[in-house]
Amino acid sequence: MSKRYRDSHSSADQILLLPPSLHDWLPDGHAAYFVLDTVEQLDLSTIERLIQAKDPRGERPYSPAMMVALLFYAYMNGVFSSRRIARRCLEDVAFRVISGNHQPAYSTINAFRRTHLEALSAMFVQVLRLCEAAGLVQAPHVHQDGTKIQASASKHKAMSYDRMKKEEARLKAEINELLDKAEEADAEEDARLGKDKDGSEGVVDEIKRRESRRDWIRKAKAALEAEAKKARASKLRENAQGLRERADIEENAAEAKRKRTRADRSEAQADDLDPELEPEPDAPPDRLPKHRVKTEPDGTPKPKAQRNFTDPDSRIMKDGRGAFMQSYNGQIAVDEDSRVIVASELSNQAPDQEYLEPVLAKTTANLGRTPETWTGDAGYFSEANVDVCEQAGCTPYLAPGRQRRQWPPPDTVEGAPPDDLDSKERMRWQLRTREGRERMRRRKFTVEPVFGIIKEAMGFKRFLLRGMDKVRAEWNLVCIAYNLRTLHSAQR
Image 1 (cartoon, rainbow, N blue to C red):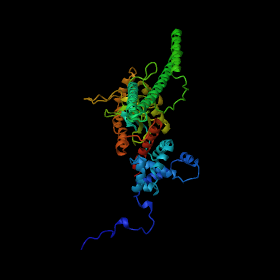
Image 2: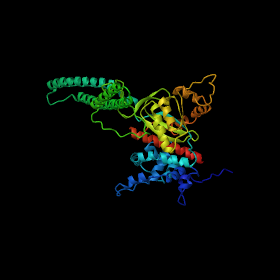
Image 3: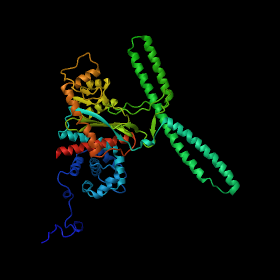
Image 4: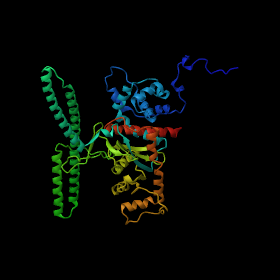
């Protein structure tokens, strides 16, 4: 007797007698249901207001809650492209459950993300509150680290200021040479074919191609020069402010007068470089500093100063493996116990040292309290950063240098460091205490694995968007997706 199969016909040919329920398509506790339930708890009023402000005529928009849930679930599962998200809404059961069996076009998904990117980014704190409500975020001990993430641009599309000048001169010479050849060819063809014939189309095309490239280089060169002037003017104004502050506390009247004279000279030079610069509003304390173009004293860019044609805000940086790529520097602060990201930021400056203070300020604002301890690697150590942490009321554990294995290991010390130690020696003392050893030991499997999950498990290794503000918001969206993954794992 032969085996009987479950279905006598192909399941694809079967007709359903009753309407299917989307809740029958996935098992209980699936991440799709979790995301839908989570989005119901979020405040979407900012997105709602933008949608309702549009002309009510025309095609009805998709539900904001559905679109937000679709983006969150897609990012949680490493699907970042709007085309891939749209395809999943056709082929993937979980995506069809999220979308309510609708199939929004990729252009609709992309337009929603682009229009509401800032509102989506601002939901980071709301998701963090849900993690706190679930008991995940106590955050007495916070670890900070950064990673280089590739921009949506190639490093081969970047050009140094020195090469821009050489390329502009070379193209100018080639265009002049081609123009001379075109005139010679015209004269020869007039004599051979008559004045009504034209055989110089190929030369004209070559001239247009070189002129187009020269114009691109000129625009990039002018933008780099303008950026360099602003950077130099800003630096001179900072120097002038510092000189005035030192002059105010200077006891020697002659020396104080010299400092004020130098400050006046610096401000005058800054006004000459950038006379139309309006005073910028004070940057938020939690906003990371930007890269400044390196300049000569006269405000021109240094020969090696670069600008990318595709994404001018990105910079060439060295990643953890020593390779150079066009990148941004993504920063996170992570709760030691739960590995929840409690603050995220991004900038285009490669060194990490200046990022401690703004990330600490943002963490304090997000949590409503200052962490008890703050841990970072050697890239964050400076005397100023040690003071920032201590003044904020948290104990810093910042490696004064690269930690290398020593044998035998240094002895553990007890108590507060001696008063006669400088900041570097005081920090070395703190790292040799039991608490310091524990903080640095736990750092290796607290903050660094978060980047591993984001880059490998979630597959986020390259930004889709371009420009500092858009890329910063996209980084926040990725960190939201990571926290949702962590929250879902904790509730299973």
